[in-house]
Length: 559
Image 1: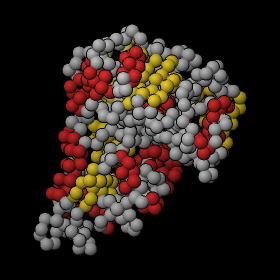
Image 2 (image 1 turned 180 degrees about the vertical axis):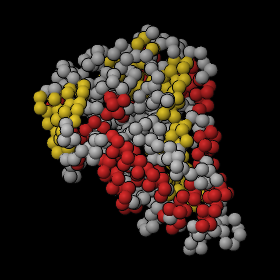
Image 3 (image 1 turned 30 degrees about the vertical axis):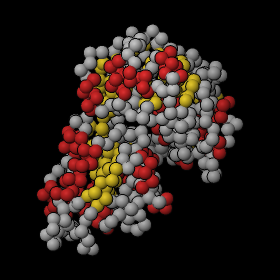
Image 4 (image 1 turned 60 degrees about the vertical axis):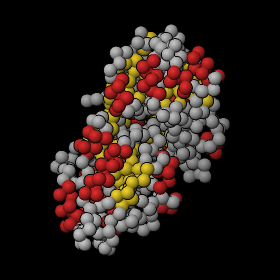
């Protein structure tokens, strides 16, 4: 199985050259043209970059700062700590009592914040309770990476001593180990009001955390500079620091890697990946992540509905599913760098994945046509266009965009879908949006969204039931199809309140089968992250850079 990599594009810089370029007013042109410092590893500064730029270093106020704040702040547990024994977070170990609601976390003994102050269970309790106490207030902390989601399941969070945190939940749930709240120091945040925490407080560097690298400088839209944390629990990192620079496109990555002005880059295109694979000093890789790309139907029938009531008919949606060839989308649009789409759960979420082989649709345009006929959507006048049950000829509006932080959805894939639907008498017009417009158009009708027919988009959940099932939950803002199903909601709610893996797997499987049959979404593919790194400067990249932590930047060496 392929390992998992980060979605973020990682590039990098020599410190002196970066300073020189910044003083000149522009880093990007220098990155593209300079070869003078190619393969210069003497200063031990790792050079990487991103095409998305955060507006603040405050994890309570934005979703966009995961890179770089994850270098500085630890999760209590989170994804990587459960997948890898050598990637623990703030907690060294954890357990749940026989009552399935009392969780105990042992914090690393002697753990310190990057400013040298003790980091204890009291800081972890503060982080969660800081969020909890905002719940229900006008300034509830629900707008950033650190948010109140899941805390309604919690009865109490208490530091029993400096090294022991206890979380008691109202009912069984895996939230205490699955949440990805970043632990922050009480002595820094205790005097920050909720209004400031969700708004104006920028959390200017140097950040204080327990991760391997300290965000030492941040220039919005330009770069972040890191210094190694001398108090990191596994020892100060061997590298002397890092520079994360921001660009508007991924185009400079190939030139940077080839010239040696970049050490690492990911989210490159298939063509760039193929080009770099021929370079002797560069290693390329591909890996699975949790992103899922889908075709969504607007299932609303009232305010915000699409152009036809057929979109709310499961029989219509199911028939369309037979007209989508996921294998061709993977081969042509992604040049093979994706897994074929099936259900809600992607292969990297191995505990919950199923290929749904017994109910899986197969591409068959004739079968799609037969099912549309049987459901009452025929071409009665012979003009090549089917009519809905109100007698209106179909002309569907498909909107699409690549949301911020997602791997790009190739236009070729959207064109294939439009072509197939046209062949079965469902004409489609395509509108390409930017990320902001996509968010506005797909919001709930009360907030001005809706009015579209079809949507091609993607999202990137965590590999846990609460997130995997988010696309189908009635009240979840991530439910892009507006689909509502009481049985699905019951299954999702029950999965939220169990710590038994087998029971959780069964609930997720039932929910996945239900939504597949009802077809408010047709899963298109699960794209791979394509990455590359130079082999001549730093060692220790491992099989894959993590999309859920700072690995491998905590253990890189100069070699």
